Structures are given as structure tokens and as C-alpha cells.
View 1: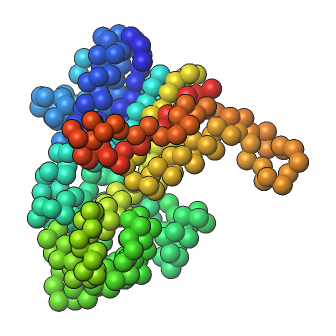
View 2: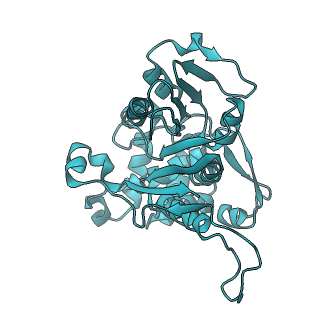
Length: 331
């Protein structure tokens, strides 16, 4: 980054990245900070943002403070946001797909299995995936493009109390890589017949009874994968990341860079494959002797392998231990 650059922080969070970006781009640069959580914007802005709404035609608020635009929206709306700001291209984009410490520590948000609170897990108002045929499993609907995006918001409480057992098992297995997805889904369905599951504590107790004893004494907490999977379903995270990545590449100037930080194997795999596809250009089947699609590479991969945190950083911030950063440059 250089003085005068236009830079997008697609996941404002605690504002650590954005503050460093502002130092790098100076007063002539422009920062575009996006977050689905209005509390992140309030914290970063340090003023009553309700008094500083920037007029726009979109369904979400935009606030301006000096040379920064703060947008309360999902990063999957990046294209619309830039169009509204009349910005055609940017010099750099960073996206950190992890939860902020403030979100985890706030029991009322329902993200943590270590704090008792309502089963919410909404980051904001996520774009939702809706199957066009409710009889098709979610994974098959995605593969067959039998779905559409809506702005319907849903909580973890609604999911655990209303989804069918097969749906729950699919979510835990697909998004959380949970070994005991079937047992946990069955236990949830049985428990909710007695009374609604309303708190994080309720859910942890159900998971604890569903999994074998040795599973409860591993390094990773036995509820980790189930909570992760629910959070990803609530916020439609993988689908939104894919939408965002496509828009981000198109928004970059030549030699502009995109850095994506993932904390989950599914996220990292999605990012890695997406970057490879856009760096490859040709999408013809391998058995074709010559290219007939005419596809050209859009980007070059800067990080052949993901950048992972050093031991010192992990000691200072244990939550960073699973972080992987991949970087590409627009051609």
C-alpha cells in the first residue's frame, strides 16, 4: 500500500487492520471499511454514527468520517457498495473471515459455547441461501444451482428447533466436519420435543450427552465444531465468501492485491480453489488437446503456500493459531 491508495477492509471487526491501512494511505487515500455488525462500526467510528449517515440508494447505511467510508453491510455486497460510492477500482482489499474478540466475548451474541447466552449467532443481516426445491439436500442444491439468495435472517435457535434431523446432521458434517454429526442431530431433535432449545448452555449440555466420553477430553472442546457449523449456516458464510471473492477480483486495479485470511478448513479450501481457478484462465477439460474456451488468467498467486502466524503471535493471541492468509495480485 502507498500514500493515496484506495483500500477496502471487507471485515472491519475490531479495526486493527483499518487503523494500519489509514497510516499507510495517508490523508489522500480512501479507506472503505465494511462490517455486517453495526457494533464494529460504532467502536471504530468513536461517535454516535446515527447522526452521520451518508445518503445512499441502498438498503444499508454508509457513514463518512474524514477519508473513511464505513458501511454496515455484508461484504458480499462489495460491488454495490463501490458502485454507490462511484469508485470503479481499488488498490488493495483485505478480508479476515474470523470472528472478532468482541463478538466472541459478548454472551448475548450466542457465539461462544463457554458463555451462557441466547442461541443467536447472527453477525448482522446475512444474505441467505434458499433452496428452490425444499426436497433437495442443501449440498445438492448448491451443486445444481437450485438456489437463490435472499435477505432472510435466521438465528441458531430457529435452526436447532426447526430443522429436520437430516438437515442438522448435514450442516454439522459439511460445515463443522463433525465426526458425531448424526448422534448430535438426533439428540437435538429428541431434546426439543421436551422443551425448546433456547440458550448456548442448553445446546452444550445436549452435545455433551450425545458424544462418547473420550471425545469430551480432547484438546478441542467437544462443542466447537457444532457451534462453528451453526454459525456458518446462520450467516451463510461460505456462499457469501464466494460471492465476495468474485466481486473483489473484478474491483482490483492492475497490480492491486487481495489478501484473504481464513480460520476454517472449508473457508481456506474455497479461497485456495477460487484463486487457482482465476490464476489458471483456461477452464477446458484436461482431455482437450488445445484450449477452446479462450479463458485468460485474471490474477497471479503471490503466496504459493498460506502464510501462518508465528509462535510469538500465537502466544499473544491464541485465537490466531488456525489462521491462514493467501494473497493474489490482479494481472
